[in-house]
Image 1 (cartoon, helix red, strand yellow):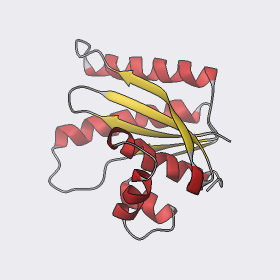
Image 2 (cartoon, one colour; image 1 turned 90 degrees about the vertical axis):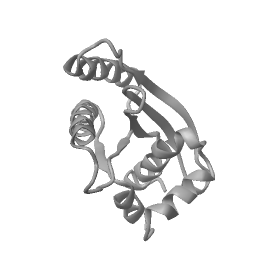
Image 3 (cartoon, rainbow, N blue to C red; image 1 turned 30 degrees about the vertical axis):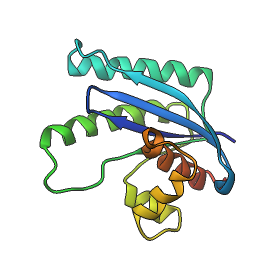
Length: 153
């Protein structure tokens, strides 16, 4: 069964990427299934609306058994503007996925590591490096977590 791992980038503009994978965890096969780049000329609510519409359209074509969004790691000195935008994006992603996907979660790196039976986020990142490129690493960690949540790991 297919699962998705989702990563969000705000540097250089809003970009959301999803990787679809099938397990087992030791022999993952995957491909990028979704990428959305927001129009920098749109205001923030419109960017979230176009993200919702684009993701919903993709999910009508194919829906995974589980989706995990790579949430922000907690850091007390993070800029409020970044946190506020990410929480809005994560909310949009969670609600859009939940309409069509039975297992949906937003997890930090440490939460994903614990779900995967590891002690530290760095251990999960190291595992993900065995499959995914540097650009795919965050979504890769999320998709490993999705495999675990779906019982496919």
